[in-house]
Amino acid sequence: MNIIVAVTGSIACYKAFDVVRGLTKLKHNVRVVLTQGALDFIKPEIFMHLGAQYVYLPQDDHNPTKEMFEGLEHEQVLHIALARWANKVVVAPLS
Image 1 (cartoon, rainbow, N blue to C red):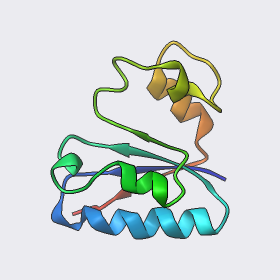
Image 2: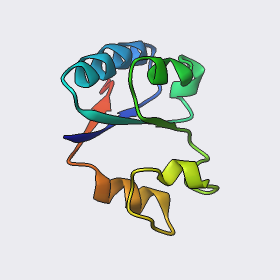
Image 3: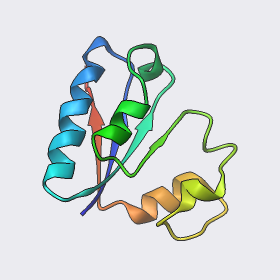
Image 4: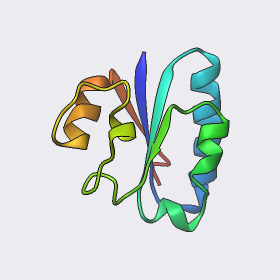
């Protein structure tokens, strides 16, 4: 299953590491989208070490690169390609 984990800015966002780790252990394809607020609390590269296929930063939708589209249907707009790719979206934390 293709899953997007959207990580919001809260002190609890470190728990998203456990969510991503668990989903990748279950063999799901996971891509992470971080809000600007999330970047105040966590480092994006940790998600890659936990098995995420890609981590998208807040500015990426406006300046996408070819590698951001790897494994996605090629679109002109990144968030549309991600929406078509994903079977589920998880928002964490919800505080």
